[in-house]
Length: 208
Image (tube, rainbow, N blue to C red; front, side):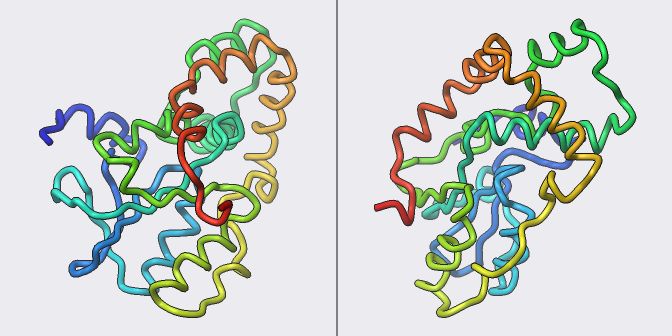
């Protein structure tokens, strides 16, 4: 599949290129990671087993993919908090016009982008999906154990959690407050309609 270079580098200035993944040279699995879906936690754990970084577009990988998906509203809240923390840490949301602008635009960087865009060109029937929720580390540990044996990943602490960072938590609470208004919640849900369709169409590992 030929993919436009402009698409792949849409968010290069914020650190992510579409198609980024991890794999081993001789393995038949790859992990396609999505920002704010436990990727900062998962990547070093796979490096334990010699996994390296690739791009399934530019490296022409056609392997069974491990993918973590997250509830779109929950991910957007975490993502917008991360975005503001990284790029606008002193910004305030004191007027309704500014808040409207955020909810009209929705996407500001790779942390807030649609999850489906990070899976462009993948055959979802050739993926194992993990739900990024409170059971993620347990299910990840169980899945990896099938290939590499017993491990302790279920006991590892999450990374970049908003509640543990006062700055991220401040931004998250601001937008949680506004999402109590149905018009803002509906805007976010409508924007991520494709993500919801994908989530509702797949079987998640550990939920059978």
